[in-house]
Image 1 (cartoon, helix red, strand yellow):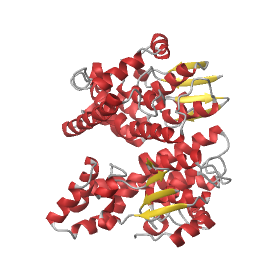
Image 2 (image 1 turned 120 degrees about the horizontal axis):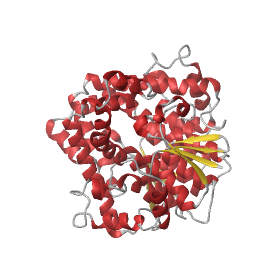
Image 3 (image 1 turned 30 degrees about the horizontal axis):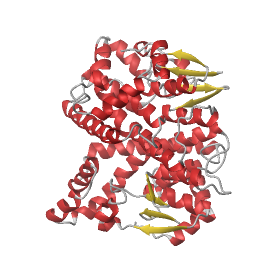
Image 4 (image 1 turned 180 degrees about the vertical axis):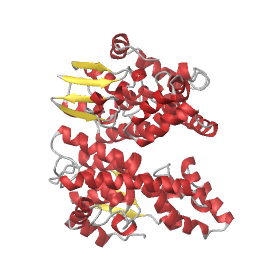
Length: 241
Length: 241
């Protein structure tokens, strides 16, 4: 039996959650509570020493990294539903899109998300409580991010991240005005991984993502929201924010 | 006929070059001259609008992104030589290693490489020549990097990159002390992509990579240098530095 450790259906946690729903694979879903810093707890670090969700357990083996898990599900658990395009060239295009999410798109959106949500959460902690939280984080760069969230992110960093979000939104919309899906003309991991980040942007960034400015992106978001697997996922798995 | 556009065998250009040599695939090799900024020229931007090498042409189609090209070669041009491990779990481990190169390891080493080599090259240009070079670069973040190379990278950035190089070297050595190869007990794209960055570190960073401090990493480097495909590649393809 597959077992997924994740947060609710947003960001990196959404990727394998939605892949599992789309493929109709049975799995046990262990939801961790980010507000309780459960991903930095000892029990979870025994599963993923990096203290990051998601992680997939398959037959006693642990696979980490959301994008890698998605490709693993395609490799190890083939179903009638395929989440990679048929041609090798189109698979390469799909991977360029998922790689872009991991190297560029997710980071700028993440910083603004942290600025809006995580900063508030960690500012409510006492100094001692906060230090305990930070000391449990295994990745030094993540420790720096938590400290920045508490101190407040510098304005020039926030401005630069907003610039990158603008570039990202334009890149997606430019492509989606002329193409139904991101890679190879079919719904694939390229769409799932980008939807993980862009999914709520019409609500979170309405000045950037709206019917006037980004009709292609808005149409694509709606098309994904209308999918039965997406509806089932959001109905079954509670969101944090 | 496959055609590879790349620089000499180092960094991202090494990845598909070595994959092609290992697989014994025939290909036309179009080497670009970085000192002449050939990757930012109009003829090359018609091939890859991002102005980055490597790019692979296969039957008139262009595939970009070095790691994606390597997986594409495995998908589209299977040979007796396999560069992915046999089990799905091990392929996932391989991808975690190649992803780590692209998201962490390559960047810190790249900045120090730029500080040592590219800075010197661009400081020799006049202001007008430099502006022409920068204006031909399509990626804004790359423009910033070229400007920084000319002005000189800030010391705190260089210090942070050296810290990350230390972390990276330790991560590789820790694994390679107990394992012959990075993923699944076999030579794979995990090794090729890491070798692309770590290949010259015993020369470039001898204070970090040496037989006393990192015996696992040094043994692995030597083992790769001893491979016939690696010897053939270095014999045939001139290096820039």
